[in-house]
Image (cartoon, rainbow, N blue to C red):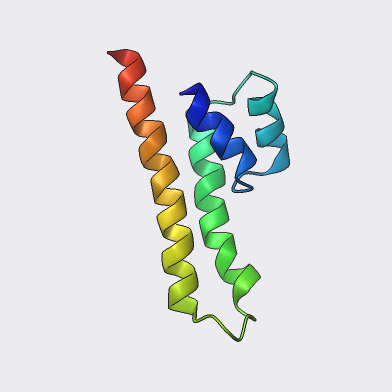
Length: 83
C-alpha cells in the first residue's frame, strides 16, 4: 500500500496537503484520498475546457482512467493488507 500511496503522492492528482502527509509517512484516511481523487476528476472539466486541441470527451476519458486506476490500486492494496 505504501508504494501505491507514494506514486499517488507524486502524481499531482492529490492536493499538496494530502500529498505532503503521505510523503511524511502518515497517510490520511482512505476516504480522504477517494474524495480528493473524485474532486480532481470533476475539477478537470472546469480546468481544461478551453483547450482547443482536445475534445471534452477525450479529456474526461483520460482523467477518469487515471483516477480509476489509482482507486483500483488502492482497493487491491487494501485487500492484500487484510489477507
